[in-house]
Image (cartoon, rainbow over all chains, first blue to last red; front, side, top):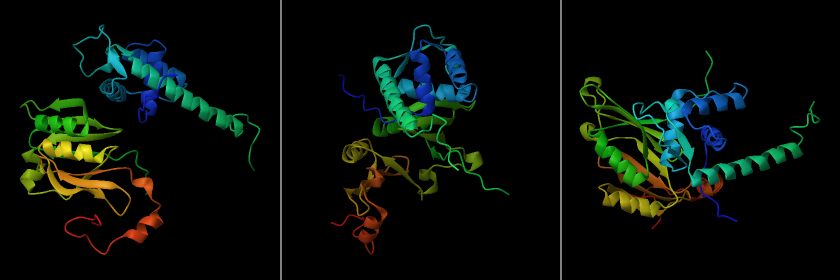
Length: 119
Length: 155
């Protein structure tokens, strides 16, 4: 079993971007579309949030820019291409496992069954 | 009028030289530059830094707006709090990089390992471990009458 990544805490936007890249989406527009679709339109990553989130993930070496990136758009993450690093893949997997345990607990608590309406 | 619950709180500091500040905060405190914008005359309008999970905006002084750095104002009454795993290592490294010791690192009555430096641009940084180690009642029992020899450390 591999050791844990010790990455302190992913933001919601950070997790969603890693999830999009784990599913094979590679440029910013595709990441934005994936997140919006995933949340039924409730979560929209604006271009500024997308850029900041990706820049943070790159600085933390969870994501790297792929070679297909267009150097003429330094602050427009929508047009740039990204991929997970091995560490990024590990961090997103650990986060997904944690969320799965939380969802299990929510299920056990009856939050997802629709059968524990109070009052 | 309704009172809103804000969405966030950030810090925006002014420095004489953005390049020097970004280099210091990156090397000393692990900051990562996310975004930078310049005025047409070359002055750095702002740099957005990620510091751990939080953000720090910094700008070069804009005298026309009276937006000045502590070095121009003669000091700053604001302290930036930086929570760390390794307070001692970061403190010593910051001092090696040009920060000035204001309160040496020590175990403090409120349950943190804590020390204060002044960075080369005049901003005060309290470096500390996590705050939530003691219950509030435990801290209340330990509050001293006053600081001693310029510190809250008990010895």
